[in-house]
Length: 199
Length: 199
Image (cartoon, rainbow over all chains, first blue to last red; front, side, top):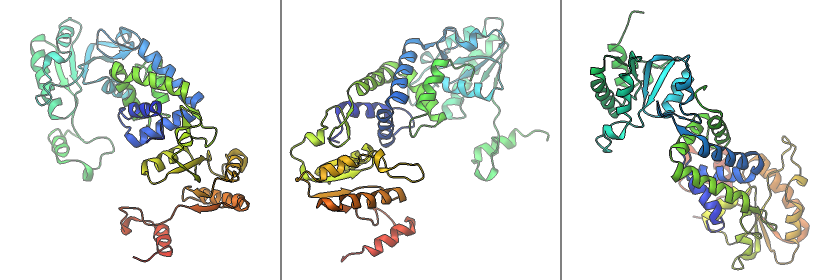
């Protein structure tokens, strides 16, 4: 692309690193930014600056917020006896959107993975067991993905938390809302069948 | 999303305005930026600043570049007898990537549209006819989209350029490279048949 200056090339290359944007959509995004300078480019610059300057990891749960402790941990209306363990902040946001949980969180920062060489020391495990022992917490809910690494991590955490006296639970498995049996994988159907309950 | 601070919310909202990113992928992109502060967030801030400060529209063809005239118009190796008319800078970049064209460009800045109320005065038409009359230009290639508005605009431009003495051509229509007949729309097949040529 000899006709595109190095500054635009660089902007495109960086946009292409965002999840969800490939090289083609990064070009479209760059073009959209350049054409909408006042409405989009300058506001995005400001928003990135504000995020870079102000967003920090919560010292209690590890979530990202402009406050430390984060809005959830600082909220005394929350049920302090519950901790929901999530892989990443994105999962925390998803739980909050669902609006069905009123306890606190603990962001692990990843999953145990033999293949990727991720051990417990790379995750926020020590601070989780510490929180579980503080006397207030009654239940730790493992909201980890239903993948091999997610389940390995869940089993490991259940072991580590076994001596603390708190209940350790995990999200139910089953047919998702709107899920048609035709389109579900066999594993989900089998799990939903095993976990069947009175109608 | 009560647990997400207003700064992060604003960043997500702005990212969601980029073409190709919806609300969900904008959240993932924001998270990726916040987690990769040094590698992604700060470099993107710099790239946006550089683009905002340095990228301008070329006074000759209307393309976006850090130079004015742009790299294409400043390149004396280019064939000055050819002008390729494109709707937007994105189409110019696509032509350059194809690497099959060595002339100059003219970015219209849109298409005529009765529905959207876009008339010739909103496009860079006057400067196109002026360039076509300069004595050097021999051919104007209309590389406009094969849509109703694209074709309306092409016919209008062909009319406007009729008196200038330059040849006015348009891109060929036909089966795209790799195109299987099974998957092509009827219009493309009909046009490819009408424009058939000796094998």
